[in-house]
Image (cartoon, rainbow, N blue to C red; front, side, top):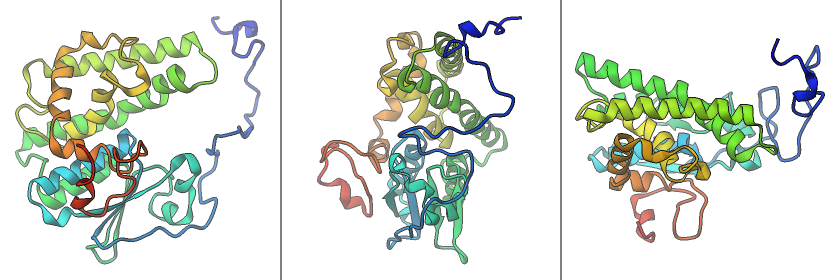
Length: 285
């Protein structure tokens, strides 16, 4: 059977043990158990919505929606966005774990409710905010169902890109052809799914801009241009409909703002924290 020759494994000769044991690795903060590693109280700002996040694709989904809500006139969507530095283990602090036991960004607290509402998983946050403000989520039965189909598709599919392709192509300490081929094939299949779907649609759900677009864009839009520096490797030119859609989303003012919140970068180009719309005034957007 394929895979039985241990000399072909990585590293050569490796055979999975009968029982796996954890070997801590330098620079890797993850553990095979959940829970807080240290006590840390989270800051609280003046707005009802308190976001604890980082400007990764999953974090950008939420800040894009919040900025779109504000642009659409929903003043109640004003928010404080606090940076969670995942490379330094902030997500394992006791305050963050109390909101999200899974220790992944983003996490949101809605303090306009009594008691405050704790939210985690980016798709859940998008759905909650869209329902709360009655925006970017169709009310008509079939379009609402389609929006949720694509939101759930993104939540279930993006880990292949982020957890699979991105890891083995850009971050793994060694290049493993089998792993890169496996996840590249799946990534390109997903890009083709979107490109085919968008051939005759302006947005993911026809002519209506929804939370499905906001969920999908930070992952599959960005990978066509900048993410992992893989556009040439993935032959991004093969997906013109997806690129046209991505360019349309990227040009929106609220999207440009949302993408730079909680995102480390050169001074004057991003906002490590966001507490008011005026915070963007000093930036060149």
